[in-house]
Length: 599
Image (cartoon, helix red, strand yellow):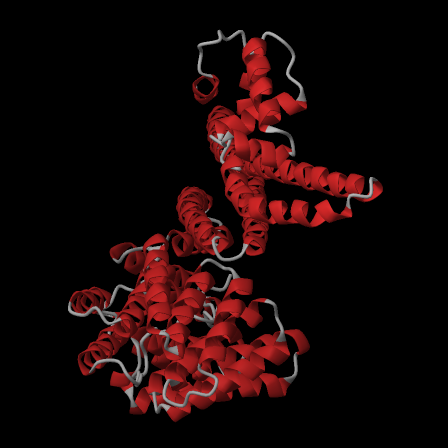
């Protein structure tokens, strides 16, 4: 099993590279420079505090757009997605107020970064391309162009679109060189290395592997000459990737490969010694060391390295997914050593960690779904069509996540079941264990069923709201169409009767009534569809469609004259119809029909 991801495509330091945005205040520029330094040192709390103070000290929309965008992306890195979404909205609002293209680009850069964390590559591409369009002819905001191109590279890497990946990573490289930022250049080199390594894994061409190693060395050269200007995460990932190269791909002698890899790992350990922000890298470091020990056939040493990595992880913030992988690898080593008791212990720990990781992922997915829902609701105000696509996309992610989780759980339940069948020492203990596993499985299914019920309930509520709105719109449009048809019929009758001189007057009256009826149409859409059901329940005689139409106009407080004009009848006819409606509802002569309809 491999513990080292070669590169996390868009896990980059947000503020790496000094921003030189024209028109923002000098004090705001100093704040952004200070935030850059804090971010390079992974001091997120200090960066947030500086931005909070800066936001309170200004009301300029341009400056606020920048500071909210930077703050949003820091919270995105901290997995506080709902707060990040709210800050992105504030950045977009202030960017719109400022009417500055660079501010809009920075705001959409923050939104693209958030969508990347939500694993929405479609939205990443939309936001990033829109941001690039805003600064296409701007020479002063190169850092924003770098980040937008890097985000596009990450999005297309998920689709394995090799051509566009290379285009955007090369563009990002040009901007990183232009702003003279070692950290941005190191990130680009790591990205290029990862791209060539992915191609090598597909085609097995030696030249591709050499290119991957070449860019890793370029990144490492920047680390050596600009250590203080390179973020901790970039520094550690570069060293781990180089060590992993010597473990998996180098063709030197084992001792030589091990010596070089351990030199890089020592640098990574030194950088992580006083920093627990990226504690999962401890698992990668000791995973590589364990890999070398296994290549040499020393299972005891391989086990010791894994235990050291596990100890470092548990001493820091920990990572259930990495801890699970280490325990599973320890179980495999114990099996190779024929230590069945230790293997069973490690396997049981791995299963517990798998369940813990599953629960943590479910909570994180719930947060992601909440943020996606809020973003969809915000976008729905601007474009109805985007709402439908966003909803379908969320639904697909949810179904896919549930299916993968079920498959993953079933696979490991199957493995653990056969493992216990083979190595259980007593039948009684085996039966007790199976009973416990069944109870846990039932609890997991119950939890998934509750989540499914909650999701279906939300979907039903959305469908009900949409149905009610469509019913209201249908009522309003049907009244409008019927009135238009009546007008056209009158015009036709006048033409047939040779009264063409009265047509102009009729058209003029129709145009005067149009403005009033547009307001009436909006009010009709506010009526609840149950209004007509309740009318039918209260009537003592069956109501016709014309009765319901009169009731609607009276409920909306239209005057006798307005109703007469809308229906093309005489005012006296309206008064007579009101009297007949009173009779159908069983009202007395002195009763108020309009008051009855309001109640």
